Amino acid sequence: MTVTQGRERKNTMNEVIKAIKERRSIRSFTSKEVPKELIDEIVEAGTYAASGRGYQSAIIIAVTDKKLRDAISEENRRIGGWNEGFDPFYGAPVMLIVLADRSRSTYLYDGSLVMGELMLAAHSLGLGSCWIHRAKEEFEGEKGKALLKSLGIEGDYEGIGHCALGYYEGDPPAAAPRKENRVFCV
Figure 1 (cartoon, rainbow, N blue to C red):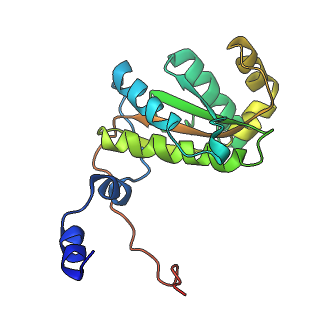
Figure 2 (figure 1 turned 180 degrees about the vertical axis):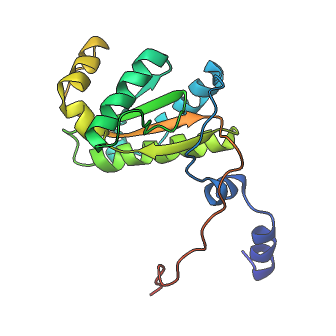
Figure 3 (figure 1 turned 135 degrees about the vertical axis):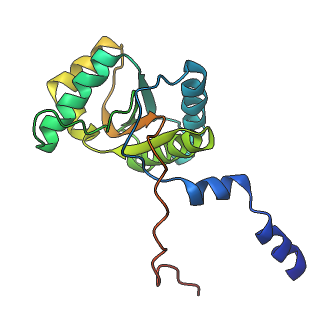
């Protein structure tokens, strides 16, 4: 690639890189229902995340049932120690839960990559998302284990995170300035 080609490429930003730069965590969602087709498209994108040795051992649970969504939110709130009535999913109507098989040495990284893919896919389709923690604690508890059992999921899975998903309220936040001294070239 010549210097000129490099400059031209810089001026016409790739859509993936644009999405990476624009995506932000959303913490205010509307109650508008997300069409199943969009959820399916986002989940499918998550299944294409890189994984150690290509094992694809992370799994995704798409929760759209309001009663179950609210029960998971309440358990997450309890674990987080927030006051009653607080919704740690910020009103998002959909939650995508990522778990990964602990028998794989790369399980934590694999599940984290799935989370990143889900959030980028959501952004590219005009939806907001936010990584919500405490999935590990949820699925170590009896309620989480019971949910997995009810879905027929067997194995030693660890909760990696929840991807709160929905239409965002208001404007997405602007990116914070990038910190200096984070990249070193040798």
